[in-house]
Length: 132
Image (cartoon, rainbow, N blue to C red; front, side, top):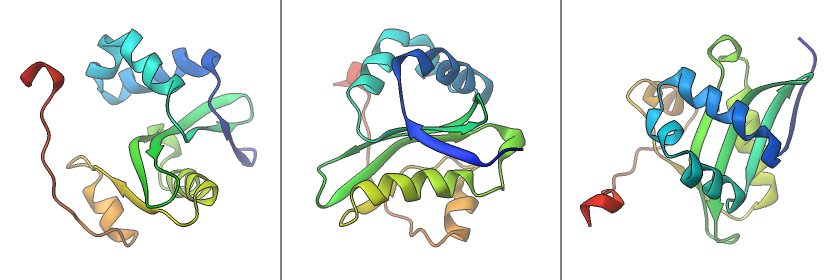
């Protein structure tokens, strides 16, 4: 495995991002193709992790650039997990906005990862657009 590089998202990365979403079972993102692409094009930071020429992970975030950096999605291919790639993506995103706190949602499967890496739980509520 070559050194993992992190770079900004480019629109031609989107099909591979969607393939990663599909492999992870994040079907809502895959099914809402146009909306998901729009969200990528309007998000900052939007980062891609590369092993050579292969996209192996990503981070899509939103920020006010001063107080909060919200990580909307963070995903690393299963075979690359536990190699510090997710942490690297978060660190690169935070380097862009060093005064911000980092907030993110976790799935039941990823909760332990975040707790083991020093993240504190916080609680919130959500309604989908269709529910409003």
